[in-house]
Image 1 (cartoon, helix red, strand yellow):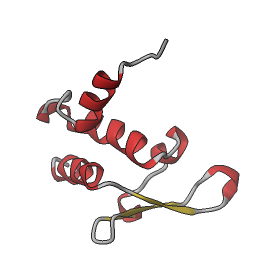
Image 2 (cartoon, helix red, strand yellow):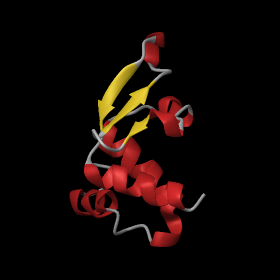
Image 3 (cartoon, rainbow, N blue to C red):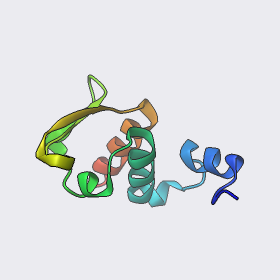
Image 4 (tube, rainbow, N blue to C red):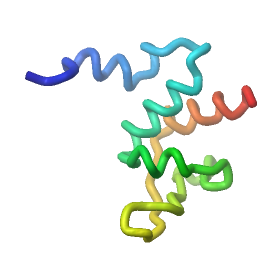
Length: 87
């Protein structure tokens, strides 16, 4: 038995499940699901680590202490930009 049905998962990952007012939560969910980042990596993420032009995120504090670069899907980057624009 899966925790989420495929249809529910697709709805959440599409971002339609979360309203515009929930921009922070949407950015968190899409970043974790879209990039495979760990929660600790997300918690340590800085604005400087986001490369919107090239579509990747630089993870400075990765597991094992080695920095890494993760590719980020466009919907994830869009959600991050929307969230940052509300600051």
